[in-house]
Length: 244
Length: 244
DNA sequence: GACGGTCTGTGCGCTGACGCGCATACGACG
DNA sequence: CGTCGTATGCGCGTCAGCGCACAGACCGTC
Image (cartoon, rainbow over all chains, first blue to last red; front, side, top):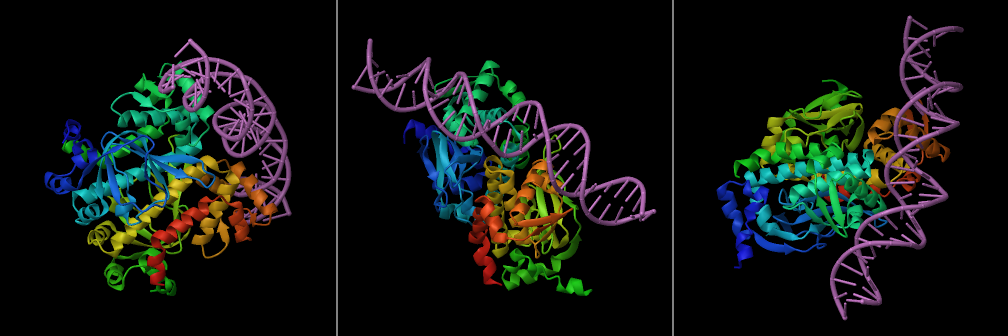
């Protein structure tokens, strides 16, 4: 086992780290470390899942794809969550796509092992269901945000979410990609990003964005960021802090 | 017991009717029939729930309320679903409001009884989780629909969903109320409704809308309606048809 | 049958975002 | 050090939806 694998602790994922020791021990042999590359598709819309992923350093984006090919992000998961809810919810698949937005590591677990542990009805089930409820809040907030807020506000929110999930404040991402995530035009993102740069909140050059002033971004963002964050703390905060 | 109560069969709710007979029998004594009035608030954002509702003839709307007071609907539940997911998902509450959109009947069940049956891990749990996944799809589709489609398309979609949940094609609803649901201006709804009336798809007078041409509405709606409907059939269709 | 409240139609001006096209700038790679 | 691919800047014209304001139409009620 290499050094990187050793240091790649499954407990970097908050959901896994929240489990009581006995449940975690039972799960541990089933957790396979994987490297996820930028742009890699974890699962395609309608495709049956055979693994659930618990990211530790990777960030994964949930995208909805329209018939005309345009996309929009409905949720994001990093070390605060998991990818592949449909597996334990019973649907086996969902009509959306999961794409790696920031390369990094994750642990995957096979469908069968996951379902087995889920149906024991212990802390694991509780955490998975609470996370699912959190994800619903995230999606709901995205829905209203899409209707009511400006591109610039949404960009701020999106940057803040990324900042929370990333270790650094450097983000490898072009305006074009962000536009796909937000479901808006590339130019719209460029203009919004230009504003933010002028205000000194961020700096960017050819595909890397550096966040300079976090609290400034929070002010410029819409309420949606804060609401969702608070809901995470409410639903999963006590679980997670308990074991940290 | 009056005639109306007798005929008010819990099995009018598709989720309840999908249960195997033994589970249904166990649940039946816990199901209390209730009348829900137009505009009644089932639960308020952040309020702890003590009942889950299975509508039979009523329609309930899930609304997200922004800080500035504007609202937007993220989902709808009628005899195809239930209201109060947060109860079995573990959060006890959600940051949204549930309002009766069309008066009618429902069965409610107390938190404790519901949780007990849920944790047995049988067909009931399966149906509740699948419905939750369906609701996520509905919300996701709302998110992208908000971003990408016109008010007129969204109005069509909204009318079609109502038509599915209602027995009749007469809908008691003002433009103003619809605007609150869709999170748009009242005038926007009036204009869109005007178009649809000109095309002969609907007719309306002061707070009642009659749907005249269902397939015409389907053509005028965006893809979102069909996608969500198909997902319902995939997730819950086989369960439901089995027992009908 | 008059009144008042509510529901719908219409007309502004305004803005944010769209779609398109193209200019520029950067940087990796040979 | 030149070249090519990609990332960003910018300038159109267009349009849907917003906010506001007000007029007409309809209905229940006294």
